[in-house]
Amino acid sequence: MKKFSIWAVAALSVCLFALSCGKDDGPDTPDTPDTPKTGDEAPTITSFTPLSGTVGTLVTINGTNFDATASKNTVKFGNLAASVTTASTTKLVAKVPDGAATAKISVAVGGKTATSTETFKVTEDVPLTIALNEEAVTLYPYPKYTASLEVTTDIGENTVAWSSSDETVATVDADGVVTALKIGEATITANAGGAEATCTVSVVDGPVTKLELDKEGMELYTGDTGELSIFALEADVEETSTPVWSSDNTDVATVDQEGNVTAVAEGQTTITVIVDNASATVTVVVNPNVYVVGRTKEQPLGSIAKMWVNGNVTQLTDGSTSANAASMYLYNDDVYIAMTDSIAPNSVIKLWKNGNVSNITQPSETFAYAANSIFVENGTEYIVGNIRNNNDLNNSKNAVQWVNGQVQPLNSMGYDTSDALNVAVGNGKTYVVGYRGLNGKSVATVWENGVPITLTDGEGIAEATDVFIDGNDVYVVGFEIKNSLAAGKLWKNNALIGSYLGISIHTVFVDNGDVYVGGRIKSQDHYLGAIVKNGSDYTFLGEPDTFTNIRSLFVKNGKVYAVGVTEDSPTLWIDGVNQNLSNIYGVANDVFVK
Image 1: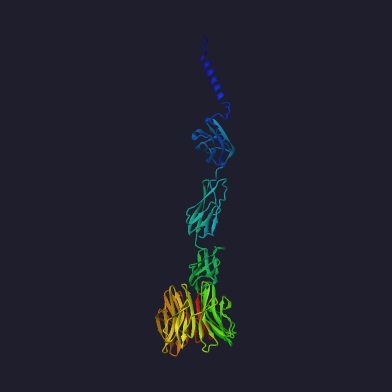
Image 2: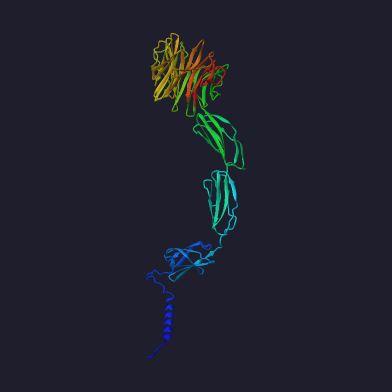
C-alpha cells in the first residue's frame, strides 16, 4: 500500500476547488419560456437622477431586481462604492462618495451587476460665497413697485432658494422678484448650495407728495354724466401706480376708472381717487330732474306752450297760434305732454311725446277741445278735458276722456255743463275728477271707471280739482263756495276728511304717508299761494304783497316742488324757494320730478 504525503493531499484539494469555482462562474444557461423565475434575476438600471452633482449629492437610481435591503445592494460611481440610504426592488437612493469622478453607475445584487448607459457627471463644489446684484433696496408698499434680485456669481448647476425674513413686509418669489406689502424692513436671503447672500429691503411711505383734482365739487341731475381728472400729481418716482377711482355711494353716482361720473339718483356721494399713498376727494350732489310745463305769451298771435327741464326751456309750439301745455307725465323714459292748441277755427288737443306731436282731436267748425290732464299707465295714454259746441248759446262744456286717442264721454246726464280736470289710474280703475253744473251751481264729481260719484250737495259752486292714488287709498281735493265763502276740500275714498276755510285747493300729493295740498288763500286784497301738510302745517309762497297761486305739487324724498304763478309769471318753488323760472307773462301748470 502506497502512502501519500500531506502536501500532495493539500495540492489536490486546491485544484478540485479551483475547478469547482470555474464551473460556477461560467455563463448561465439561458432560461426557456417554460422555466420558472427563481428570484435571482440580474438587476437592471433604467435611469437615474440627477445626471450630475457634487460629492454628497443623493442620486435616485431606477430599475429592476434591486434588493429591498439597502446593505445587499452594492452601488458604485466608477470604482468607488457609495452608501445606499434608501432601497426598494425598483429604486435605490445613493450618495455620491468622496473622491468620485465622472463615471457610470453600477449596481450589484447577489453577485450580478448592472451598469448604467448614462454617465454621472461629478461637478465641483459650490463656491463658498455668493453675491447679489443689490445689497439694499427701497420700495413703496404698492404692487407697482418691485425689485428684481439675482445672484451675480457663478453657482454652476446649483439652484437658488429665496426667502424673506418678514413676509408681511415683503415677499420674494422663486425668480427673486421682491414685492413690498407694508411699511417696514425685511431681509431677503438667497441660498445656493449652502452659500447665502442677503439684501435689505426697506418699505417706506410714498411716493406721491401731492394729488389734487380739477374740481372741488360737482352737481349733476339724475342720468347726467360729468368728468373728473387729476389736476396736480407730484411724486418721487417717474411713473406712479394707475389711479383708482371709487364712489362711496353707487346708488347716487358711479365713477369709472377714467374719472367719468354718472348720476344715478338723488343724493350725495363722495368720489375718491387714490394714487399709491395719496388720495383726493370731491363731493358729488345729484339732483332729480324737474320737469315743468305751461305757457308764456311772447307773440302777438298767442301763447307759446313750453317745457322747462331743470330750468332749461323748450318751446313746444312756435307762437303762431295760442297754445297751452296743460299737463305732463313721465313713464319709463318717455315724456308725455297734453296740449291745447287754438288752431283755426277752434282749439284742438295735441299730444307731445319725446318731441313728436300728434293730434288727439282734429280741427272742427263746430267743436272746440281743451286738455286738462294726462296720465300714462302701462303705456296707455289717458287724457281728460272738455268739448264745447260753438252752436250752444250757453257755451257749455262737456267732460270727456280720451284713451289712446279714442274719445269716451263722461256721464253728465241731468247737468248742463261739466268738465274733467284731472285723471289718475291705479288698482285697475280710472279716476277722473271735475264737476257737473246746473243752473249756475255745480257739484264736485269723481268718475270711477266712468261712473259719476257726487262729493258735494250742489248747494254751491264746487269742483274736484285733483286726484292722487296712494296704495289702496284715493285722495281727491277741490273747493266749494257757499254764501261767498270758499273752503278747500280733501276727500279720502270719497269721504270728506278735511276742510280748509278761505283756501281754493287745486292739487294734492301723498309722500310716505304725508298728505300735501296746495292752492291759494285770500290775503287782504290778493291771493297768496299756500301748501298745507297733514291738515295743519301751512307754508305760504311769495311775499305778502304779491299775487301767487299753486297749480300743481310733486313731493320727492320729503322735498316739495310746487308750480303756478307769481304776478302772472310762471313759477317753480322748491321747498318754498322761487327758482326764477321765467319773468314773462304766463303760467306753470304741472310739475313732474324724476
